[in-house]
Amino acid sequence: MKLLFSSASPYSAKVRMAAEVAGLSIQSVPIATADEPAELIDNNPLGKIPTLITDGGITVYDSRAIMGYLDRTGAQRIYPRNAEKRTEVDVLEALCDGICDALLLCVYEKRFRPEDKYHQPWVDTQWRKAMRGLDALETRIPRMGKTPTAAHIAIAAVTGYLALRFDGQWERGRPKLKAYGKKFAANYPALAPLMPSA
Ligand SMILES: N[C@@H](CCC(=O)N[C@@H](CS)C(=O)NCC(=O)O)C(=O)O
Image (tube, rainbow, N blue to C red; front, side):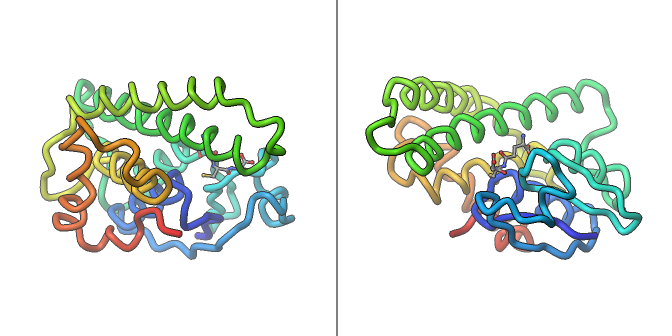
């Protein structure tokens, strides 16, 4: 299987960690989405990463569809079977992805808009969403067991992305999330190299 990805992308980090946990080997191919390379566009009309191309030639996107695919096809499940626990994991993953969506909009406003068109109130709104999301997450971090679930992995992806792009701007009042990356890496050392990186 081939995964079109970027090392900084939190959604890419999430699915790469999940593939490792599921025991599935994937070939990771770095992609610069802004260049709209044919390999990406031909497989995902939305031009987004992560995009997975299975050995059978099926293309799977977005990250949550990929997580479901990995869960169904891997040797190790990443979502609980119990309905109540599954809902909790689904919502935590949605919360982490939503925080990433808001953070990404902040980054893109700077990266892609001409300086005179940069709209601070829009960035402030996205930042508030992300910070409210982190406050909610701080109160419901699941205990780390022997094998991480999609929720543990999604939290590692978002905190890793924050450490990469917003170091020093979000940690105050959120001691558990601040400590999460180190604890996750210590508990699951095989996943540490797959966290978002420059
Ligand atoms: N909901 C999507 C979000 C994916 C996403 O926004 N990825 C970013 C990189 S972190 C991207 O591809 N950006 C390029 C673009 O939006 O054109 C998912 O979960 O996979």
